[in-house]
Length: 169
Image 1 (cartoon, rainbow, N blue to C red):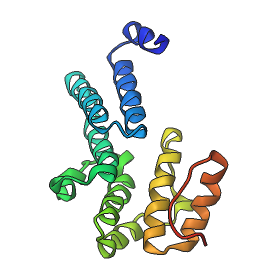
Image 2: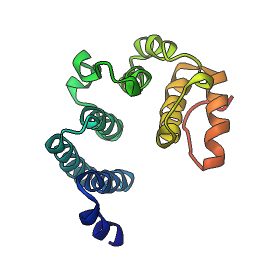
Image 3: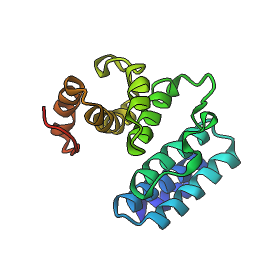
Image 4: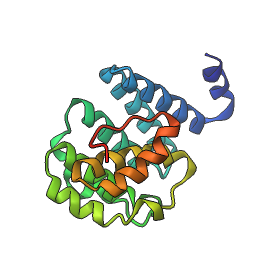
């Protein structure tokens, strides 16, 4: 593709983005094995270049893949969700873990983590993370019966054609 031809001229970081985009597309097409291989390549590349996002990229993808094919046993281990002092993961470490807990039917534990996230109206998100974070939060809020949050998130997701599954408050 034209995008792939540009990657070689830009650098390793751009190759990671291409691999991640291809992995996300494979995931959306339910090509789970291909998605996992592509993301594995992306994470390996991040490790090679010493990129600080390697842990977050790995955990995020494992969370999404597990949502479709079942979560690995170790995904809820505390060290998986330890992002050190990286402030980009302050919200994600709680919200994404709550998402996995909801998938596993452990809603009481998920509720504790979700409450620690605070109201979605107050979240400060990087532009590229807004829709994915809102979609994950909507799934968690719906599973926990947090109808005000579902309503807030639905009102922001619907104009972007993002479908959420859960109660319709």
